[in-house]
Length: 109
Image (cartoon, rainbow, N blue to C red; front, side, top):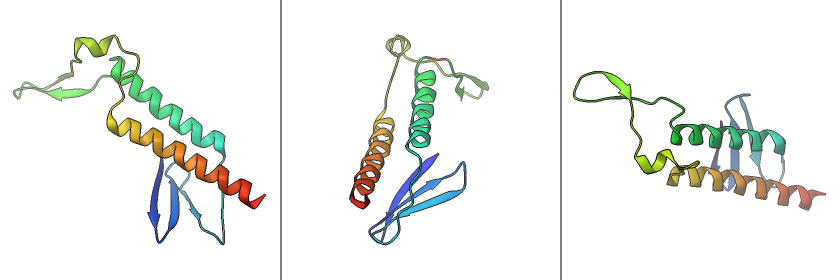
């Protein structure tokens, strides 16, 4: 998963899968491959869509009976994508990072 945070006016991107960190600053800029970042985003969206469509079982317990499949509202069963605020924020964050990287690349070229 790709995580980002801002520290001392520097953008830190951490890739958990490959254990590497990129720091964007004015002195040194290292870039992730755009295709790799977009694939992470696609995987995350596909996983969220599968949960919304009920293709992934989510364990839940009720009244101490034990785990069972969580029931989705009837209306959500007919929707292909059911994005929450967190999903939307994640998508916006990844796209924003890609915009910042592409603008930085154009400035240095």
